[in-house]
Length: 439
Image 1: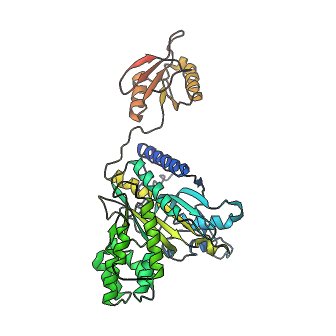
Image 2: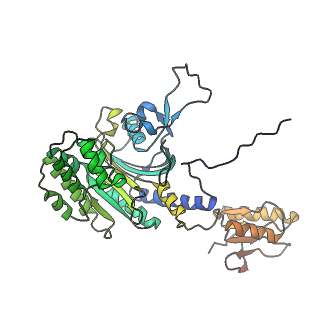
Image 3: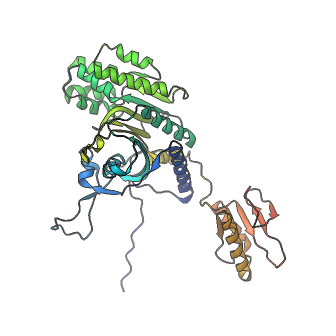
């Protein structure tokens, strides 16, 4: 008989996984994010992990990143085989979802969605092939109130503050400002400039300058004006004045500056440095049309955006003959989480959610231990029953290794009391399983 072939277990690049104590923290984060979204009246939606390829490719910009889905034994000659792909974000799926369920939804439709997404890109720090996104969007018929541009940013700021992560700032811009400015410079394809400007954090000012001249074909004075705009930063209405001072005028530019000023003013009560106008923020995706957001760690500015998004005029137009604009923000949970894990900044404790471990005194008293554990669970305590009648010291070591805070001792003899031990301090006292509460 031949030996069984063994596959050596190894991590898959770009597919992070966590040990139990780290996963517990991630679950806690998800609960905090969910609570914040629901605090503002957003409802939960979950869409399939796969979409029809024609849905995923409707916008045509991320086709190189889509993982397609095929059966291992699929018949290549079967033309009827469904063409499916794993979703690469949650914005395209929600556009399809809203179009499909249009008659069943109440508008403005306020939804949040917390799911894994997949992108076939080269893994590196902060970039994964599988990761968790936490999206919050508002979609309405014909028009979305501008107040939501500020409300979504506020929600994300609250979430990141509550999670207690290292310092960060939410950078905001408006695509109408960029497009109106570029058009007024006589640039025929503003989107081409926006795509290049979006690379400023990757290639630097000099790199963008060269690309605008060589790849887009801008004249030197046009390049200079674009870089002057991208250099503007600020936290208040002075940003609008700084753009105006560049001497470029258009109705679209004015409209964009008004919208940007509104969002900045609506967020002005937040601590200084929380929200910053940043005229270099472009968000290269075609579908953004108004406010755009990128959030970055202050101490790691090159790490990549940890929460981003923007306003889109008609993303669902590919699926329904109705105009359904929206605005949304996505929190890159895995990107944030992985950075803190890598930097050793994530505080972990227990490797399980158990409140109490009930020991098994001996084989004869196992029934008493089972009954005790059931009574504690009925009262809402997360209770684990030790699996066999081992030495008490071994059972205590098990609780210690898993970080279980309390160990319960059922009566070792008839007529004796129950006792509970606090593992951290070592105190052990009598307790009643019908009334005891975790301190």
